[in-house]
Image (cartoon, rainbow, N blue to C red; front, side, top):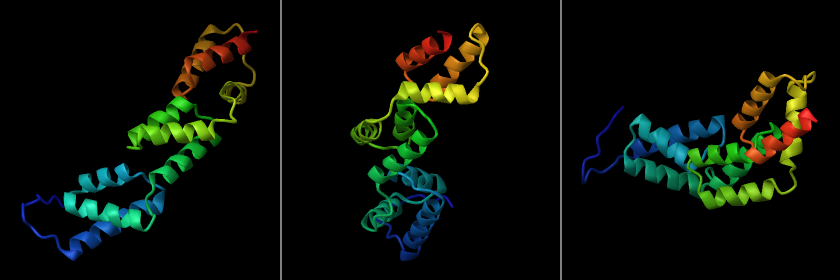
Length: 163
């Protein structure tokens, strides 16, 4: 359904309605950022004007809200023990504004001890960890890095494990 945008072309109500239906279908699965919806609609071949009107409609109906999305995403990832860096990177990749990301992370991570969270994650995953197993320690370090923990937190956890 790739349609080339022609200057002066009037978009039909049908095109706009199809765009809205598609966006609503995307939102049925999960909350999405404004940029995610734009990207998906662009890939599907919708014209820029249709995308703009659809986003405007979604915002007016409060169906798309980047702040709400960022909070939900962060809360979900926090429950699954992801580090601040990973969540920040994910949100940035989904087109959420940097200032909004920083604000949400600051608020939601204010009472979180990331080092303790990382240590508990390691203890759950490897309950019978041997302190002398260098290969396993490297795996744990890489695992925590992939989960988005900072170098300082990884070093702290590694020190606690090997003590």
